[in-house]
Amino acid sequence: MLVVGAACGGGAIPASTTPPSAKPVSTVRTNAQPAVDPITALGEPDKFPHSYIVPGLAQLELDSPQLQAAPASAELEVTIIDEQTSMVRVAVRIDGVGFALWTERARLLGIASRDQMIGESAGGGFWDSSSDAPFAEIRNGAHVRILGHRENWTQVRYLGALEIDGWMPDTALVDRTVSDHSVGGRMPTGLPTLLTTPGTVVRAEPKWVAREIAVMANGYFLDTIKEIDDAWAQVGYEDGDIRVRGFVSRQDPPGRVHKPHEAEVATPTITANATIAKATCLYTSQHGEPIGFLLDAHAAEISSGRSPGWYTVSFDTPWGPITFAATGTSEHDLASCGPPLPPPAAPPTP
Image 1 (spheres, rainbow, N blue to C red):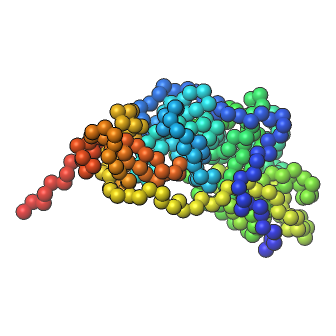
Image 2: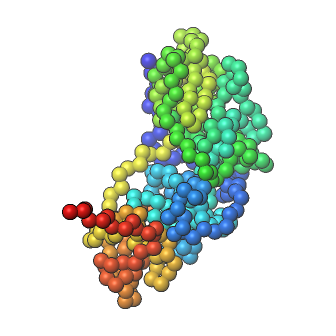
Image 3: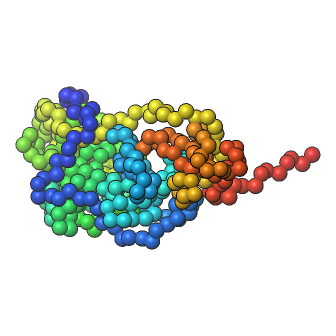
């Protein structure tokens, strides 16, 4: 068993380690698409490419009050429906509620458009996977954080069972995809298994000063390819997102990982007083734009609005409680704008 001290992954996400020569980016390279109506995108999600965001600052409208997600919020799959310089509008489907909001383009994750070796630096420095040489590879469909950009290269960080930092050519990254991608667990190889702990460093050579290829973050097992000596072993790892090969020491202290806190169970902040029916239309404000609807019946806090026939409905979300407007003849008969509901089942034949 490999005995390694506890990694420093329990605190807040540390500041980026982007080198001075790598400029932080506020945009992800993309082919701009025509704006999509939020109701259409939410009602027919399979017809549009999907993207991923890390929730952060957001707004229902560009000039509306800001919303702030908790630091430990989990990544979300979304649909990009509009773009304006450093902002993107995304359609979000969360816990039975679908709606659109604007968020920073920098919140988008990059998506690998092909299997791609990770470079040590911008412009190259790849490891060769065709021999016993060490390497790290991001696989098609995996998503990564964007740390910086230089010329035609993007500095990325992958967070999964292992953490990988390095460089990818811009041509290997997109911000939306139509492909389904499932990570799955570690792929079995039949090789002996090496038990590790978070912080275990995979290096390019069996030397403690050698380049860092990856760091164990959320996983525990590596494949032992070959024993080098009492301290070092050549190891490998593979799952649906990454492939890694390098060297691990049984004696070195743990390295630094940047994994965020485990997302805590959110404490409800609204006082639900009604159950809102499926397909109920959600507006930015009274007489405003419809930006969503309920995907399923959902508990909410509802109250009368300032104008006759209008109501405010609030839901808990990763951005905290969000208040929408709804309209109808009463609190129990609100207008709908989602996909048509199926007709009621026919009564059984006597």
